[in-house]
Length: 610
Image (cartoon, rainbow, N blue to C red; front, side, top):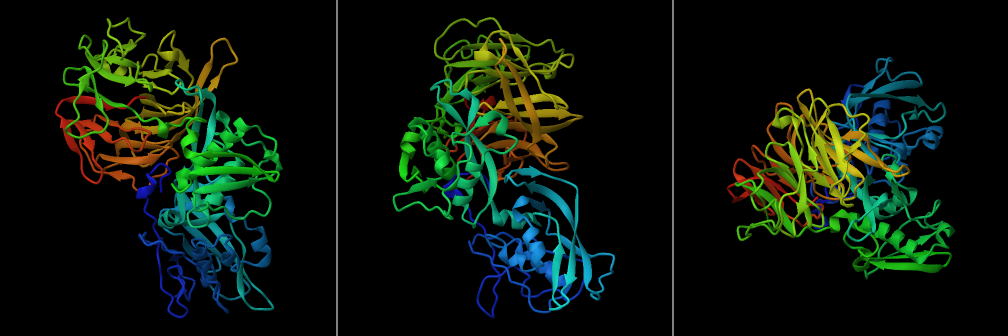
C-alpha cells in the first residue's frame, strides 16, 4: 500500500489455495469447512508476491450454521466485484438490505466466530454467532482510512428455511470485516486530487493540487473506482479546504461500467450532460484532476480526453498538465541544505553521493556571522529563515545576495533552549510557520511572506505542546509533532483561512494521528503528496525510520533501514529526490537498495526547501 510510492517499485501481493477438484483458485479454508460450532477464527492470510484472482465458494447443500458463517466471512475477502458469492450465504431479504460498500473494518487478525447463547446447538431454526477481534482501522463509505483501536464485537443471526432446510444469515452488520493482511491484499491506497480553495503557488500563481488518499479494492477495476470516487467529491476531512472543477452532479455516462486506456496510453472519459457546457480552462482543470489521480494509480496513463454531450470537451497530456496546476510531487528541489560543524547554512546538489560538494549559502546565514540551530529555505530557494543557536531569535534573509543579518522577525521569551522556537517551515504561498514553545505562552505562528506582525494560528483540539512544524507543499495540511506527558505524537491538521476580515484568521482544524503505534516521534518530513517519513519508536521498541500516510496507514514498503540517534530527516515531495538524515555520525544519505552512508562527519540538521 501507499499512494505516494514509486509505481515502478510497487509489489502486487496475492495468495493462492489450490482446489484440486475443479482447478480454480479458492480462499484459504474454503476446502475444509468446520463441522461444529466451536470458537474459530477466519485466518488472516500471509501476503505473497504472486498476483492471483481469489474467488469464493458458494455454500454447499446442507451446510452447517458454522460453515455458513465461516464461508461468508471468507467470501468477503475475495475479488468478487459485487460480493455476489457472499450474498448467497444470506437470505433473500438480508442480501437486499446488506450494504458491503458502507464500511470496512480491519482487525489485527481475522474475525473469531463463537456461537451465541444457544450454546452452539445446531437444533431448532435459528442461531446467533458473535464475531470478535481487535480493531486496527476502518474505511468509511467515502473510502477514507482511519486508525482504530479497541475490541470489535458484532453478531450475525442465522435461520433455517422451513421449505429447503438450508441455513442462511438473516441479520448481520452493514459493511465488511476482515483481518489486516487480507485488507492489505485486497485494498490499495491511491491519491485522488482536488485544488486548494484559498492557496496558489507563489511562483506560478497556478492552483495547488491537493492529494486526498483513499483505499480502493486492488483487483476490482481500480481505475474506474478512482474515477467515480473523484467525481463523487473529496472526503469529509479535506472538503472544507479544497474545490473540484467538476460541476456538481457530474458522473460517468449512464451505462459505462469500465474504463481502459488505449494503446497510446490515452484514457477517454465520457461524462454526463452536467459537464457539457464547461469552458476550456475549467475542462483542463478537470482533466488535470483525472490525470494526477490516475497516475497515482498507474504510470500507464499519459493523456486524458473528456467527452460529454456527444462531443470532445478537451484533451490534456502529461507534459501540458504542469501548465494547468502545480503539485508537490512536481516541485523538484535544486539543493539539499544542512547546517555544518561551524553552525553555518550550506547546500549541495541533491543527487547525493560522495562527489557532492557542499558550499556556504550566499547571504548572512551562510557566512558564519550567526550560529544557527535550525533553518528552513523557501520553496523557491531565494530566501531562508534561521533560528539562532540558543533558540531565542528567528531571522529571515536572502539566499541569493550577500548582506548583513537583519533584525530578528520573532523572539521567544522561553527560559531554556527546549522552551523556545521550533524549526520553521515554509508553505507554497511563501508564508512562514513556526511554534514558540515558551510554557508561559505556547503558540503556533504564521508570518505572511516571512515577515510582518506574526499571526497567531488557532489550534482548537490541540492537547499538548508543539515540538515540530512541517507544512505540506499544498498549503492546506500541516504536520505537528506534539508532546503530551512525555509522549511525542505526529498529528496532521487541516489549515483553514478566513480572509473576510482586514487581517486573515488562520486555524488548524481536526487534528488526527498519523502514527498511532509510535509513542516517541523525534523527526518528520513530508515525502510525497500524502506521505511522510518519520523517525520514532514504539513503546518498548527501538528507534525506526518509516514511511506513513497522512491518514495514519502504513505504506507497503513502510520500513526503512534503521538509524540511531537521528537528529533530523530530509525528504522531498518529489519521490525521485534522495533521502538524507543527520545523526551522531553526521550527514547521511540513503542510496536505493542499500543502507545509510555517511557523507559528512559534521552536520546537525539536514532539509530540503519547505
